[in-house]
Length: 257
Length: 296
Image (cartoon, rainbow over all chains, first blue to last red; front, top):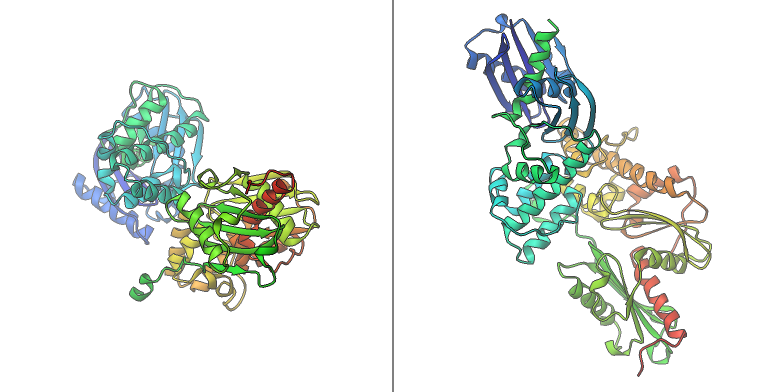
């Protein structure tokens, strides 16, 4: 049985192909202005990656903020269920899953089958999503990829008062004027981000084992800050966390077939 | 487009003013109020509780410098030496960084007192929308605070939020109000995102869909008005209602907010941005009258 899960996100569209419970292909590109096109192209990439044809796919499920644009999908699944099933696929021991993407931060409490029992979302505030890191990288004049490693060079804790992307940008500019070292500023940024994400998680209680998915998971500075703030020894994360929700959608497609 | 990018659309007019009818030499008490906000700073110089001079300028990166510069700018039009002042009160976001202040007083108290002064003692509800915060204050006939709520964590509805949009659309901030009404047909609904960052993405999408700058401005001003109103609603509105801070000058937001409030707002000849500093200067005057002024 071959299924596809397509996660049309605010920034990137991700497609996953699964065959009999194994990931066989993946594709990703910028969502851009044409969601429908991004959905089709990401699937195309995944099909090419897997070496199979669209007709071989029994069921395509769409998810993500742009799921309505997934006209080629047979059905859709909400992101909470998709992220839960995705986390469970990679780590059956998962009981809390966190998904921090470009514009949303979510946490779900899940059971041993990957069913969501409770959840909390931030979809209204850019400071609780990847948009925060992106904006701060611009203010620091470094790339997003450099932000994490930069933060790990710091050993000093400086406070960051702003809870808002717009205000934080001004605060960072102020810190730069005051000749604060960039690694220390980066650390303050990641600590403040982690603190906001953890307050989302606390709304549903922190139950180990904790799994992180979503693009922000690539950021080692954030992951370190998150582990420290959660006071846990380990946060599990799949190799390519950005595909987590697409994987979950493909899993649900297979389950509901 | 390239030309517009060189312009600083967010830059509003800095100003100073001197009262032609007051001679500082014949004043008993000269008191100064300095309001250092995160975006703008004001200095108000009072002679026996009447405004003698004031200045309104952008806050620099250094609070002590901002305070000194604001006072200097206010003194510019006068021939009064700085050390003539009998008392100085600091307030605002950077109030602890007014090095020459005799004391500092909370911005909430100063805004209520200042609104009472510039609008008159009938004011009972003050809405202050500054660079980085929104305050809804209830006060009595003496300008004393009886209740308040403040948002200083989120840019939505604040001056900074407006600056981001003015930059995005390439519309000078002084023109935003009028431009937001320059469209044909029905007024568009508010942008759905409250968050300035997400509203910016939403606006970019609307522009791509063919919306005019004016229509996008209208939709954003509407959203800002709704945001501000949600704070006012929680404190409650008692007449008379007055607005202080820079946003009071933006009819794009004000004209969309007032129907939600359901009242007319009070009018003043004074610059609405000086309310905090005026209140601070008045507190200083009260201190002098109690004999706490600086010894000569």
